[in-house]
Amino acid sequence: MTLRFLVTGGAGFIGSAVVRHLIAGTSHEVAVVDKLTYAGNLSSLAAASKDVRYRFFRDDITDSRRMREIFDEASPDIVMHLAAESHVDRSIDGPAEFVKTNVVGTLVLLDAALAHWRRLSPERKARFRFHHVSTDEVYGSLGPAGAFDESAPYRPNSPYSASKAGSDHLVRAWHATYGLPVVISNCSNNFGPYQFPEKLIPLMTINAIEGRELPVYGDGRHVRDWLFVEDHVRALMLVAETGKNGETYVIGGEGGRTNLDVVREICAAVDRLADNGRCASEQIRFVADRPGHDLRYAIDATKIRNELGWAPREHFERALEKTVRWYIANRAWWEPLRAGVDGIAWRRALR
Ligand code: NAD
Image 1 (tube, rainbow, N blue to C red):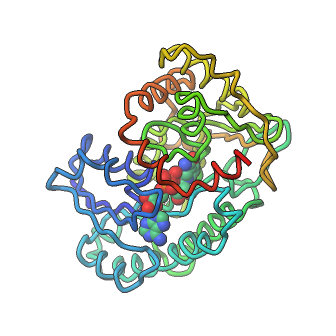
Image 2: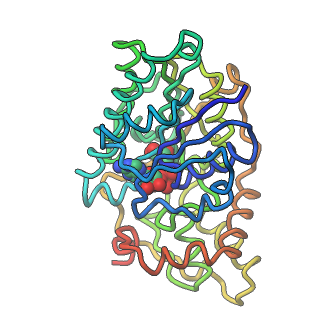
């Protein structure tokens, strides 16, 4: 059955991967809402935008009048809410924007979704889902052992993760209080093509390609569970279309690695693939740690595996190689961003 999707943040890294999948791999209709902040990029949607099933609204999710109008126009069956301020370093320097977009923006969308849902026919009402796309960072930091599952307590440490935790709670409350059909997913760190070059993997890849320094926070021993973005997109589709109303699903690659190991693997891939005669790992520099830097994240994805039949398909090394190849081949995508960006991460890291 053809469904109508409303994807917020569809010009960002994960949102654009969702939209490209919806257009290329399904018969669904897609309306995208995106403010096009520094992190939104229409060139990530170039191919999808030619399809008649695609519509784009350049709007701010905190604008309640516009959100109601867009719900009226797009009349979605499934809302996939990805719009957010997403970079931890930026949240340390400017938390207010994170609370505005991530908390107030989610509130505005929930209100618009509820008004829309109440007007639907019983059949469409039963099908409707508000899918909130969130992060495992809401659960805080782990010690050397253990993994987060859906019962993990909320312990956010950064302004970013606190704002995402706040939005998770609002979504849960709109389900419990007003009966809005919702699903929430909390995912580990993503990587892949089209990721804005302030996050670890694209930043280090581009710096290695250009022979620049590779600034690693602290001693580089922080552990992250990396998931290839296309594996995340398959999980998001399953959660949105078949997830149980009111449930949360944690999603992760189950492949923890230290940041230093990831940077070394990027160096090896760039040395192998970029053919620029340098040894990138010689450029690794340890810089002052990020305040409140969580030591380790890990995910126990048993629930989504058992209930929705999802498992990651990509091995980290192979997916990293694909990603490095993409950044080498797609300078035209990232060079304008790198040149023009007010890169808080770059300034902080290179201090
Ligand atoms: P991103 O920063 O690449 O994209 C965010 C998008 O939201 C951009 O296109 C931006 O223009 C848009 N946006 C920001 N503020 C807006 C506003 N007020 N109104 C409308 N649009 C606005 O982020 P991403 O990495 O693609 O992450 C997408 C979602 O997934 C976020 O909610 C994030 O918290 C969550 N998430 C990300 C990761 C990850 O590793 N990247 C992991 C788990 C969860």
